[in-house]
Length: 579
Ligand SMILES: *[C@@H]1O[C@H](CO)[C@@H](O)[C@H](O)[C@H]1NC(C)=O
Ligand SMILES: *[C@@H]1O[C@H](CO)[C@@H](O)[C@H](O)[C@H]1NC(C)=O
Ligand SMILES: *[C@@H]1O[C@H](CO)[C@@H](O)[C@H](O)[C@H]1NC(C)=O
Ligand SMILES: *[C@@H]1O[C@H](CO)[C@@H](O)[C@H](O)[C@H]1NC(C)=O
Ligand SMILES: *[C@@H]1O[C@H](CO)[C@@H](O)[C@H](O)[C@H]1NC(C)=O
Image (cartoon, rainbow, N blue to C red; front, side, top):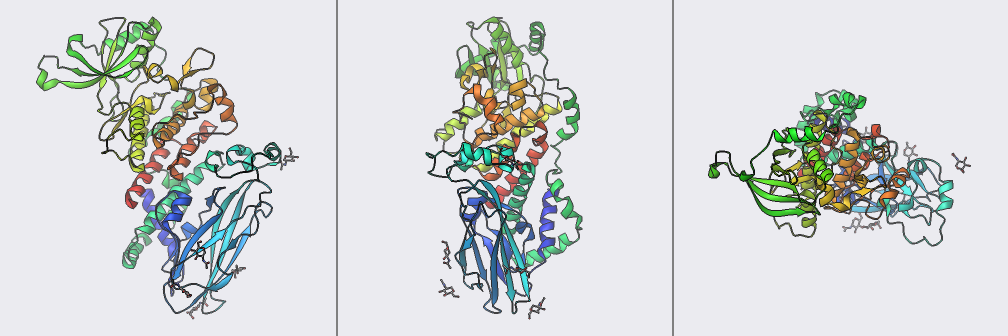
């Protein structure tokens, strides 16, 4: 929470500049803020004459399919009258024609609440990101007595005929378009520019934009919660005591919330030198490991089959206490097992993968807690029960509104689940384990929306659509693999970050298949070209920014789990405040 208060402090410190004798309000209303940022709140640039420089300094991105933006303003007092003069500067006049507004260039700030519209018309001559500044000079009494407000916007402009989803990858977006332009000069593609969510480009400042977006979310929240002037001044005094160091420290501080759960940072250098995931274990080793937690067959009773593949099954079962005192020690469990049709190597793989998380204890990890190897060809592995079962299946049921009306699965609840997954992975990384197959299919959930990560045994059999062979006979979760894991089988905490990004996407889409229309053989070149999964409908831009950063080409550019946790926790808190 320290990072948060520093930011709030800095907003206040900056906030004292302004029209002390006047009562101007100038803001984006909540509909507009939601449209551009995915946040439901008013974003004040000037509130009761006090300027929010924090909000003004944010260069707000405008997607290709949005041409008009709206501001709401009002001079709260009849006198003194307030006059304005507005002007625009455009960084790239070839890509954008002169912007315009539906109010006159100069005039009087209205006393009744009014909306004005500003248009950023792309010329269609070329594709580019255009920086536009709307300058508002506001004066009271005389022209010499003026305050300059600069509203910065970064508008994405596309060359006519280019579909947003065909946009070239990062290096081209940032630089040279001429080659790409020719390529996209396809006369048949002139209809619409609305599919901008398909675009993915790793902007140089990925992390930076992320920080800004989240910071802005907090700023919005903060200003929104300002209900009265005296609360303002009380807080003002309080934050005044924090020095202006707060300003310079804010961006770093924000990504380092002082929570006890972000200890992965310390462990990372070790990982870099040599990642030792579970080494390939010999059959006898695996048996020995599982035999340490052996359970007599008679203590297990199998119930309903929850998931079934060609040879693997997951049962809902009951484990009774050792002393036979069934009443006191009956425990519901998941039982993973494999039919006697399975080949020896499948049985072996099942046992190896099931033993991966053995012995770990964490609220967001569900390791194997027992085994029954009495029937060699049909081993059973026992896990703690979670009453809503597999997370992927749960999400899919909820999408079809079949998971019961008591689950609304709001964005906030989905973020809550994501946070838990991060905590589980952080714990694994502290234990020097790279999971390598983070996905909703490898998680379980209960009715309190507590999520636990499991090992991936049987997943290939139970979720065959999620795994593909690329000719090497190795069945891998291609669509969840980072580029380096896909091409070179290199795994690191950063490859788990990538998979976590895909997992977030699965949560936001309620269990849809990522890259559904991309052939798994083409994944590597698809990723190389800079394409990624599209932003899900209803997924706030901040959350998409978080996942998109997880898919940075270079492992070093991807955020650390501690940063992801900080972002999502703040986002979670912010969501809680508005709703
Ligand atoms: C606003 O005021 C500044 C400083 O006086 C001036 O340079 C600028 O041209 C003015 N902008 C407009 C749009 O009038
Ligand atoms: C708002 O104010 C303008 C002039 O100040 C006036 O012409 C207009 O009728 C007012 N509109 C409303 C809805 O009060
Ligand atoms: C400008 O456009 C907005 C939105 O279309 C509208 O509400 C507003 O009344 C317009 N203002 C003027 C002065 O035409
Ligand atoms: C602006 O006008 C107000 C009211 O006349 C006056 O008090 C203030 O000193 C002026 N400020 C400047 C910078 O001229
Ligand atoms: C852009 O690409 C064209 C064609 O390949 C090339 O001639 C030009 O020098 C490039 N410009 C820059 C700035 O790289």
